[in-house]
Image 1 (spheres, helix red, strand yellow):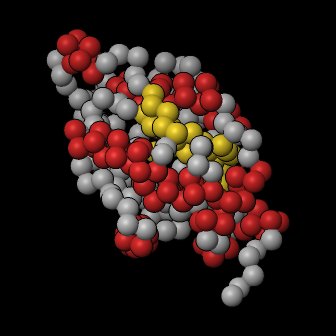
Image 2: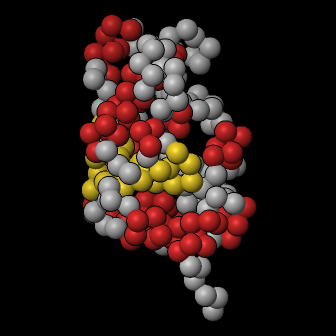
Length: 226
């Protein structure tokens, strides 16, 4: 059996091409050992439960931050409740300041298209502001995220570790995984997947909703510079 990489080797490896040779569980254990207030964020999209399962095996009470835009499918809500009970998740749900019913009444129940002038404002309201609020309230120092290199160029260039908003260390243990790896893990660990996923802020899978860009100066249209 190959020897487990040293702590120094893991820290150096996550910044290089060697990261693909380090098992996600090893990266998770290493980062948790040095974290004071870690969190994991999720949208419960297909395959997302893989990283959640990996992380809670190492730290059962880690906050699992989920932004409920109000637009999820009914089955997604039922799925999340089943996973919350099965894995005993410390689920932290954040909601937009306006409910979907309130927004629908004033905006004619319309979800803007990505080309529309009000799309950015919509994404900010239903996902980015609640996400930023979660970071401000929990003040994590390590953020586990399920982004992968095969999703788009921007995520590929981020690597396994990168700097997030407010100086948070962003860690993507599955960065070099592919859908087949997620599927294999689901089968091996007998994990139910969510097949009824909908994100109104990402009309195309390769697009960024803005969460991974939080903290970039001038990102928000309102000039808040979050």
